[in-house]
Image (cartoon, rainbow, N blue to C red; front, top):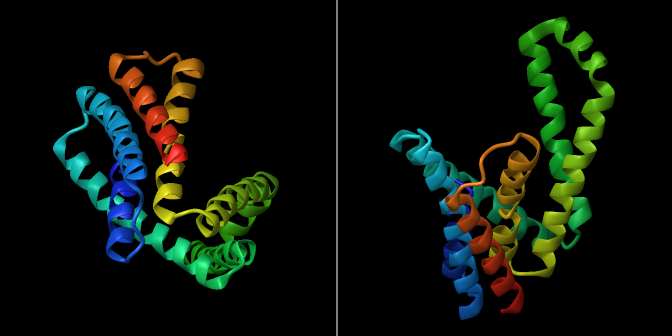
Length: 187
């Protein structure tokens, strides 16, 4: 899903009238190919076609919220305000829904996890805010592509900390994602 989303976002932005330079397009495609190498490695280890279908479908959702966030922040003119309002508008309805569904048993659960929850929420807001801010300064399609490089860092952490094998497909993924990111930067 992370490999298709930047490509879909780039195509959507093209149809909305915001085209990239040729070098940036090449960088996006190479970066996506690197992420597809990770997907290929996962398929080799047992993921089936139904998982691929779900991933592609999820890519359209990622494209949708990336476009909504990027265009919304650009229209708003203040990335920090936009990111904070999106978080507020998501957090309160979500907690009210869970409270209505779970009843009072939810309150002790929240009390026992308030500090880690707040820390995680603030970290998420910071990460999201940086991406939103970047979309107000650079083309949305490029930010969307560079944002997906996180899967490579996740894979490298899995290799280093969880002692997963560093396969040829994973090496190709790192090389392609890094090369695509460099081309995007140079474009």
